Length: 300
Image (cartoon, rainbow, N blue to C red; front, side, top):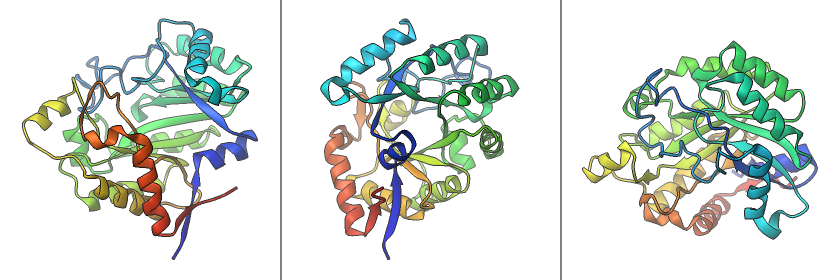
């Protein structure tokens, strides 16, 4: 039986009336899982850049970050509109007044049509939610939460730092703010079976408006890299991942936006799996598997 899914491209065309690009920016935030508030060292897979390795420098004013990010896109981004994407570290952690000033500056840029802020479910207190509510009144706001897994034992092993109940409360709180909620899920975490991974996808599909499926990358300078070098786990093979993604998409409700089918770590830091470095090839192969299984994107 065929299954359709909603791509981010189609969702954005519906929302913004045309194609948009995300610009990777930085708000110079920290992370409570690094500074000792929740834990130290961060999640074991997280890079030194706080998963924002492709973001512009936080030392620059936001307006300058936007212009430099546009230049990186080059000709393919000319004449288009953009989503300001604050990906690195925890976007609602720290001085909320300072953060709101940065996010407001991004929203007020004439080429920015929406805002996307990545954060942790345990960093959505009263003040942070109030800030998000104000931001959402101006332009469409996406809030991205790193769930990664619904398996509590795995969550402890990767040093996530919060239980599922915190994620569920965060999703309920965000639902009241008229924001688009995106959940990050990692496929291939150490110790997880195929059933564990698909259980996470099914679980997230109950709560989220959108999802990012991410292949586990082993990056230099992480605790995960040390574990990998000790031979404590293996990374997924291409065919394993492609079929897993197809199963995941097939499991999700058709109104959940698929924002990502895979991801790519900085090549200079990528230890494994090396095959993931060719992202265009990986996406082409995933789409081939999806078509073969009659899992088709919604056209409009």
